[in-house]
Image (cartoon, rainbow, N blue to C red; front, side, top):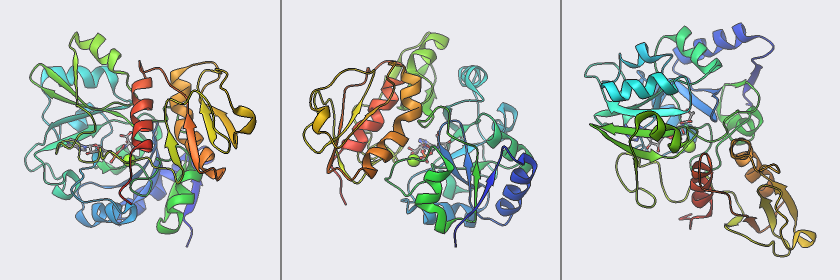
Length: 326
Ligand code: TXA
Ligand code: MG
């Protein structure tokens, strides 16, 4: 049966109440956040968390981000040192996930953290925080898509992918950031960037005066086992750094730059004709899905600058283009 869809703009109270009812029954609910749509469930309820893994077809060794309403609530579940607290105060609510030591006996189920002694915590902006405040428990929420596929940035994306497996999708319109949160681990005075995302690395370095340490290549490390090389995969193959379009390819451009071969391309898109990286991030996943829907055998993507949000965009594009196991 198809999921019920509630438009938040029409009745926010109804949306929050209905979400809380289903969450209390241990059911996952698709909820919009400013980054991407999340498949949220009660992080303290093992059956509820298991349903997230089942619905997504996600490997269980992959820990989930736990979403909380504010820093005070975050401190019930994680241990914050002064530097981590400073980051939380500067960037929450917002697209930053902080990996911190898990507070013993805090109630988050080991299934949500994949048994690690750390937890990834995030305070989302807007509506999702209102649901968490009303529910008063942390919500484990990965992106609301089948594992390995492109993350959803609209209720329609969620409905197309998981609509038959869900009871409720809350529609909050298009996600404004469009790429997932930046994941950061603080270790003393070292900052490790586990995943580039919606907060630019430069902004974190500016606030702290510290250089971010990056993973070398796709991380096999336990800290971010979800960062599998192949991810965000459309059906079509993806060719990066394209300076032209070959006949029959769908072309994704950036910054309105003219590209050879557009006349014989199957379709032409531009992530941001004006060359704005925040706009490009917002449009990224929807554009990949639309390029895929053209039915071209390959999607060619022009180069995107690697600074600011470009780092997250290029990370997702590299994963979309990576060789696939299946
Ligand atoms: O923007 C986002 O972060 C979205 C929205 C829904 O909030 N969520 C999201 O979740 O992207 P997901 O499950 O697709 O990605 C979670 C990532 C995974 O790569 C996982 O390995 C990492 O976070 N992670 C979670 N807990 C961790 C921990 N304790 N240590 C290291 N990495 C962790
Ligand atoms: Mg995901």
